[in-house]
Amino acid sequence: MRILFLAVLRPHTGNAVTAERVRVHLEAAGHVCILKDAFDFESPSEIANLIEAEKCEAALALHLYRGGRLVQGHGIPFGIIFGGTDLNEDVNREEKSKVMGKVLEEARFAVAFTESMKEMAQRQWPHAKGKIYVQSQGITTTPNAAFNWSTFLQRAEINQSADNLHVFLLVCGLRQVKDPLYLVDAFSEWHQEEPNIYLVIVGPEVDPVFTKEVKAKVERAPGVRLMREMPQADLHAAVKNCFAVVNSSVSEGMSAAILEAMDLEVPVLARNIPGNAAVVKHGVTGLLFSDPQEFVQLAKRLVSDPALEREIVANGKEYIRTHHSWQVERDTYQRLLRKFEGSLEA
Image (cartoon, rainbow, N blue to C red; front, side, top):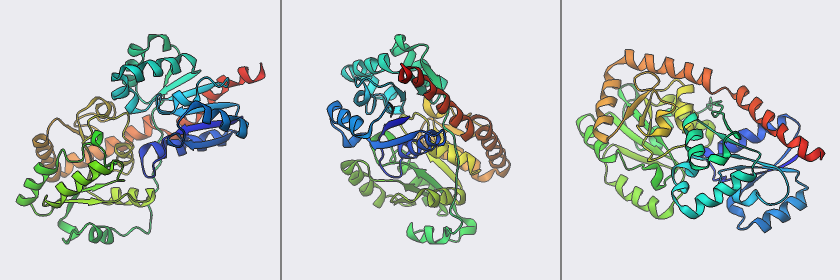
């Protein structure tokens, strides 16, 4: 089949990584996958022209609203992959929720990353029961073997001996839903007590106005650094070398940064929100915090307790092995696309 795949493809974001991984799965089954950025299109008519020009026989969209509203109504079967924005933000806007409900009526299938996401969707759109499947993100990490941690620290303006250094890495696009400033004040206070502790925020400048706010805050925050996005292999290498990965988002679908940290055997400290609690079991595969003060308490405990660190790392790695198999993800998407075949034969 020739499949149109719409997703938001901002470089170095979780959406882009997920879309590329799914594209590879589809092409491995012999399909031709035409991957396009949903933000490049403003109306369904533009998509209709693209479908005709590319002779697309089916479609897939990552994000029920951003992509789904563009692929419906064209007479070709399509499926949907939920994004966190769908169920955490867009669903609260009546007009968007109605549009998403209509998209689900027409979709042949929808994929949620977690059982809780599936349950939320079914409560909101009861008519979609029976067509929502759960498939966790498959994870593969490929650190750059040539990556130099000392060079990374120099770029981050951290001039300390690596032997006594504890770098916490917050990987996120600079937008409000990721809340990168949530821990800055508490972290700065901790750094002033223990100068070998640093927080490094790494990610693309998604929201230009908010980015200015983040830069201004970080410039005044001792022990906190801000770095631009990095190629995926370099980012994986940076994660592998840091002490722990942090997630402070207001809402998440499924954080790729958390899963990648677990796969790379690095401890995770995540804000206690439903999307994070679905993948991080407190005290077992990571640590969950409810406010900045609790974050500092838990982080200090992790720094001072190597046995806890080892246990969390081992459990996190095992969780990824058993629940986030790349091969299982591939099998699921290839099986779901077979739902289109009857329509095409007809």
